[in-house]
Amino acid sequence: MTADRHPDSGPEGAAAPRRRPRVTRIDPDSPPPAAPAPAAEQPTSERLEHSGESTSENSHSAELVALPKAPETEARPDPRRSDVDEWGRSEHMREIARKFYDPIYRHWFRADWHGLEKIPTDGGALLVANHAGAIPADAPVIMHGIETELERPVYGLADNYFRSMPVIGTLWSRLGGLPAHPDNAYRLLKEQDQLVLVFPEGSKGPAKNFTERYQLRRFGRGGFVEIAMRAGVPVVPIAVVGSEEAMPTLGHIPALAKIAGAPYAPVTANMLALGPLGLAAYFPAKFTLQVLDPVHFDVPPDRERYSRSKVMEESEAIRDHIQSALYEMLRNRESVWFG
Image (cartoon, rainbow, N blue to C red; front, side):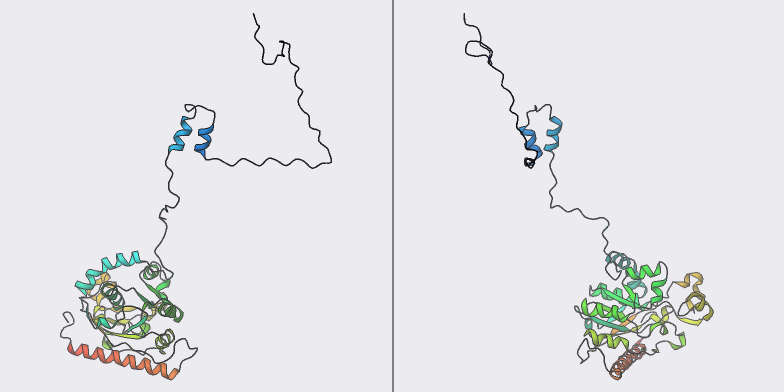
């Protein structure tokens, strides 16, 4: 009977000599051997498939691999992203204001436009209008009317005093108002092709007493004309009737204006008739707005200086044009409340 041979046994069953491990002598003066390059990282699924472990032992890992991965190209919306532009205007706030103000515009002031087609539907233009009322209602009526009828945003330039008022300043900015600075107007008109509304009378217009209604004050030094010349855009005059009667000024309190740092502190008919509510409530005067022919200037844009006499001449001509239109509209008006 032949005995089973051990795999390590010799030919006759004798034990084979055990091999000595090879010892590599390292010269202390030689550089150390280079480290082997790391193996390429395999995906998790391949590592699991080629591992020697059983599927049952890696059930948890297999479940993780089986979960679908979200596509890398899918972008999640940023909930903190704001629609406020570089000027502080928010289209979301404008939309809320339009919904709130539209009933006042259509049923309280019953705004009636004439010549609205003369306002450009594209490109920059400087809108110039008369300004009146203790708290002027003409600015929101003009801005709302153009935005709803022509679907173009309007940026309104106003005295920096409004921007300094808490809450009101922020609200005015979100609705499209910004300080009346030439650089602001130029960028909006020239670089961004926007519609810009300006009241050349400044605070002198709303400060007029009721006995001086519809008598335009001086249009400053004609700065609005120079801005339009430099930006290469037309001036579109707008004559507004109704704002004087919506909140007529009966007098002023200079001491209160000085304390508040305001341009004026009016006493209005609304306060006498409505008490505290009259501080912000308007009378239902009918608004009529006449858009006059755009004024183009035959001068090259972006000049360093424009003739002062030319600027003042154009400014006075625009003022006279608006004043004549106001007188004509008042002659044709039959009622303050019904037009």
